[in-house]
Length: 400
Ligand code: HEM
Image (cartoon, rainbow, N blue to C red; front, side, top):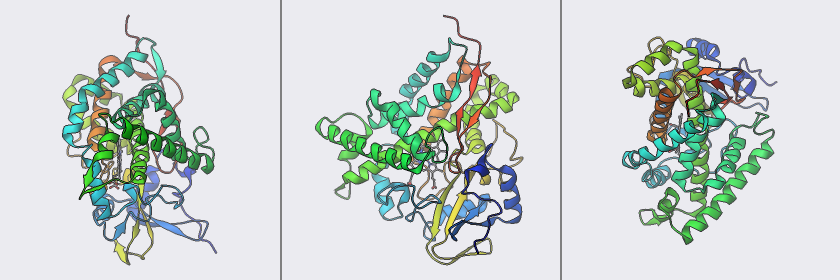
């Protein structure tokens, strides 16, 4: 007989209305290593405590990424994708692609990212109202990642639509079926092959051109690896930062005193960015697979078992954060795990994401200071991304 799940983390309904913080609390306290059975007789472990999430992330020899990083084996792409690799293969590719993401490269982008953020606000500021997600939050990461990779302007929204369809299986607005998601992945893939061929012919000053020519130990990237990296960036760069910007704004609506505090003291911006990351945790989990029989917290884990790490739960663990359910823009220290908990897969785009969030909110604080909620918020239905699709807002329009 198939065991019934007490709480099913594979069912998007569990995340209706946002991450299930009450359930996380109960699991952290009573069943920190929880077995979530699935209908096909298999299942996966759910890790909810901060210390366990960190320990499991750091121990990449016992907990592999190479068998996939999603609960479902059929989503998540190929073994040629960086997130799905283990050292030493992972280290070679990661070193190579990191050349495009050094702090120096990111600092160089700052004036340009600031201009993009300002242009996004220019577009809405005279209207007095907008959808904060589709008009603001979506645009910045999309434009930045497209610029970074070298995607022509006219193709950018098509890429966005494909990447939406890929991550939102189960949400009817974006991707009604798995078939749509699979087709979207194939289309991104075909698009990348064409773009790569164009860049070979006509090199430009962008990441794709850099990667085409970069070498590790005398080896260049294979076409397939390049395609996969492109796919990963399109999804990782778009689906995360925009949900952070949207979710961060919601946190301020729920905590207007913190919005006022930030407006009064701009030196709080960097701690505010970290607090938004902790609070929203846009990526809810990643999975690992046990390479051998092992143990977490006294619970035996068998070789081959799937182990899922719940970042949003770790980020509300009272053992790691004082008063974890308080949104505090001045929080320090704040060693959240929204970008990963260390180890080889720590978010490659971390500096870029932080830059985007900071510049976007600097612009919102300055130009839409009295921004307020003006209707119903619509959340993404997903067990992977803590996402928000629509946030109607209003504000005093800027005079012409
Ligand atoms: C708020 C925004 C973001 C969040 C919350 C986020 C979160 C994460 C997390 C949790 C991981 C996995 C960490 C681990 O397994 O230890 C990750 C990996 C990754 N992220 Fe991000 N990310 C964000 C923005 C970005 C951006 C803007 C980019 C690219 C431009 C990016 C590219 C990547 C890549 C390529 C990986 C895989 C790295 C590897 O496997 O070595 N991310 N991210």
